[in-house]
Image (cartoon, rainbow, N blue to C red; front, side, top):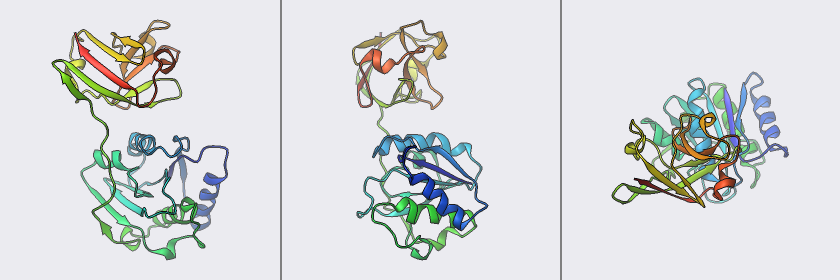
Length: 262
């Protein structure tokens, strides 16, 4: 199986062309979209998307991840074997959160140009490099045929909450989803005190809103109330029941989140 995670959107021809290239090489391939709605040029958004999804696919799935603002520049195309999955992507850090989740990581610089679609465009490596490489992988070509292993691949660390005093931390909003939920950089491992039972008294400040309630699900919030939940991705979310917490709080990706145990 081959998956797509890209910022190409739903209105352009790019995703369809990449699938055409794959089917031309391997007509029996199975191709599934994780999302083509990654925020344009946003490596962290792409990294979050693929890291939350890849493990739900069968082992040996080939994941094509194209969020590539550096296309045509010096960044390398890479083939990463991470855990039981394969990833074809630009070497720009978009796989960083996948690397964080697995112990076994092997990354190769893709240099075997006879697997590419020619001529290779300077602006569409998704079509000319990543899609054909994924297709050949899905046909059973061994990973070592595509290039040599490298150790200086690009990776970044997910922002983590930082203590700002006794019982207080500073964090950040990593993402705003389509429902207006604010995914913060806080996990139970970062601030275990916040998730203890019974829930301690706390105050979370984000934008123009102070939050004092932790609910187990969105439905338990009152209309118009901004509260926090532990989301399915494992991060603390600032949410509202059937409303946009981002709008109510006047916050978005990058907004500072202050946590104080009271």
